[in-house]
Length: 274
Image 1: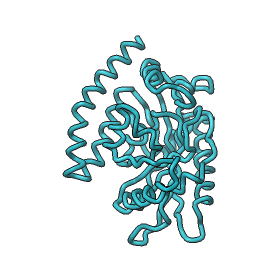
Image 2: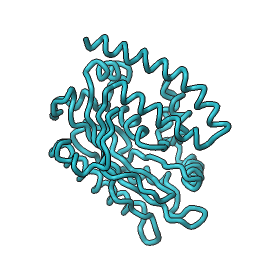
Image 3: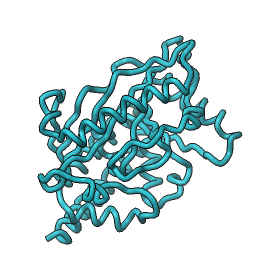
Image 4: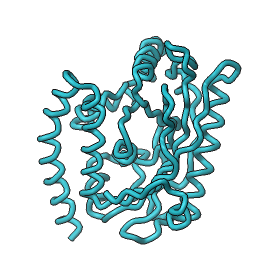
């Protein structure tokens, strides 16, 4: 049964992707609003195909420029966040070499950071600053790597070196909003520590086998919590902002994992069954 489920999902997703790729490619050249919205639709279709139940607590801040700073559990974090609203990611340069993934990432206007070349940081910061000033919402996975889904690793302040200074060109303060991601159930059953490796993609796990295993396993329940935005302003450096964001993300993620989705649901702005 699991194999049939995986084959059906992959077939349906391949069909959607083949249609969506040229549409997004054209939108990037003629319509910025459409280019921002098409990935949202694509990832909502993906979540619906997988039967994912997503509970959202809070919402992205309306102010701009806006940088979302999140913990990182799995490749599945990408469609989860992308299904909520228009955004792009800040990713390590290696992602830009992965088959298939690199194409999807570029079509979502991902900014790639070369961590091995400090000389490239200035250019990356300028690119991110320009995107933020243009109203794009950017996402940074501040742990610098994915984890086992049972904890939140320390945020790497060095990654904030790619974050632009605290104000946009029109003097608006940059808002850094903490975002917590937690996976709580699989097939409707509470997911304990021993089951989270089904979702968590970390260490030396190969991507393709992990994707197939997750597709065979069954529907997931996930919780995404948006914290209060932290203005990056004069007198508040990147290290302090990174620390505050880490504390907020860890507290919300642990609450989601320990309390379970049922206790969080009353606080949710909306439930999305996709």
